[in-house]
Image (cartoon, rainbow, N blue to C red; front, side):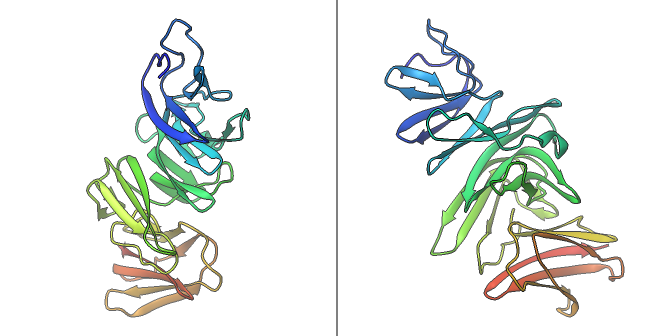
Length: 288
């Protein structure tokens, strides 16, 4: 298979009829020593750098239609790297998708990097080793990328990195998202190295789910930030019930996040229920 590479290959994908390799390599291993900056494709004359290459290690490749995504190092110490990029069409340059990541991603701990990708609609779920803050929204190791550069939103608070993601189409509109990695907790739920959820219309997230509806901090004292993995449908309503099932608050909900004042609530366990016609999400939290 050609001359091979000078360093580790971490990812492979089949894209538009050709094998693509990504990894730590920067040149071929043979006498030619051809430059291949972390991503290459195998053609009739051997391996060649794909387009303009990438500026750091590639951990994962994902082919979706005519688009190829690459995920890898986001920050090397404090130096920004490509993190997430895509390419469409022969000869086009790679498009950086996290160009301003240094302003909202941190190392958590060690180099911030993307390790896993799973497609959903026009976007991607992104797993790896990173801390993420977008305004008042905080998360760790799992995020949703909408398809627009720098629109990376946290959807989980895992205590350690996500190494693998998979999506399972179980019916016409039921989509399962599965995450595996070094984590053992998502917020205060115990999820020993494997977590699952349903992320499409009409399904209720399972306990320990990495996506869907999350809320933090948990336990909460004064304010609780509610984050949804997709914009809520029109006319969505957010109810809060106590441990006895009594409704303590009800309000309209729009968009994908909101901050609630919970200081007046009595200490205890509460459930958030977000619903619209034929659509439902829920999440439990503790008021301290």
